[in-house]
Length: 466
Image (cartoon, rainbow, N blue to C red; front, side, top):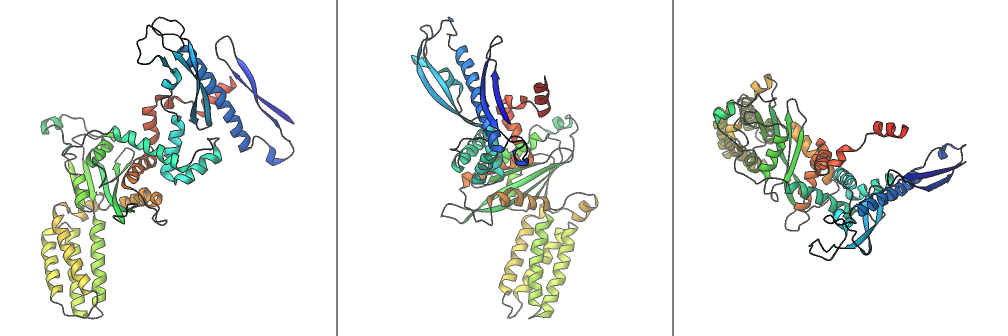
């Protein structure tokens, strides 16, 4: 059974060109031979792409052949080849070079209209695909994936994909406004006149660590977060604190995209660290900062384990410490840090005078002292957790702990011990967070409006049927 596929391109309303692009001799009695194979489909798409781009480039060159001022044809000086990278292969484009008309006082005597038009040699759709998949899996796996399903150019490699992702992220970075110490705008009478906001927003921020490529340090910290509005889509954000010089601006832009107003109720759940806490300061006059209950209980659990170890050496002192820890936890759960702090100080003093051969006693005392400092520094962020829980409000950043794993762990490959530069990790975080919350495509459509006009499958089927 022989199948011939022909391509017909209408260059003008009155004329067209027709050419056979593929001839197949396929059996009809074998299941694996039914329909196009992946290799055959890639061949068809590649040939189609070449012909379509050639027709578009020829039409564009013809339109710009004449001088825009006087309308006279500009003589040709020669031709060059432009290689345009697309999802369906690298396409060579014949680019004419023209002598500039005498009435056009340009800087050069000759020019290439197609070179001026093709300011980028990578198709936006390919750039989007590379950025999307490289944000989800490794650069090498992205190359293998694209080569498996698309007739992309054979020269595509991991370094090229990485460079394209960095270019995309850098373009988005360039659109960020200037950093400011405060993003609170206006004054109370003005806020009262604003429309009622759609609903409260809960923002959780936490940190993680990535292995550093630079030999001066083994790891560096990355900060990630998740913004959860009551009735809008969630958003992720991430940054490398020691590299980014606009952390507050970055968070503010995420909140603006979710409809932030100055009368918006916002709750920031953090671990109490200075860098995380300072990032969320002065973001909104209606902001509430809450110390994450998870991080309090995590420290109390560690102290409880030390107390259990002490019980094998000093049972009475261990029992007193465990009782005091239970009391401290109860005070903190009910937001009573004024009573909790003296209890923590008594615990620290009591541990200092315990005489024991418990080998971890020094670590026990140090952990208790650090917990005392931690609660004292964050006392103003300790609410009544019990009351919040009764009203269905969040008291823990458990959702942010999972965000750290989703954003950092699953791409920065903790198990594989991959190493990263601060700039590379920061740029990848910008694209990965957009891929995870589904806003990367919208950003590309903002840069290239024509992408939003691509026909859907149903529209294409209607056009083909007609």
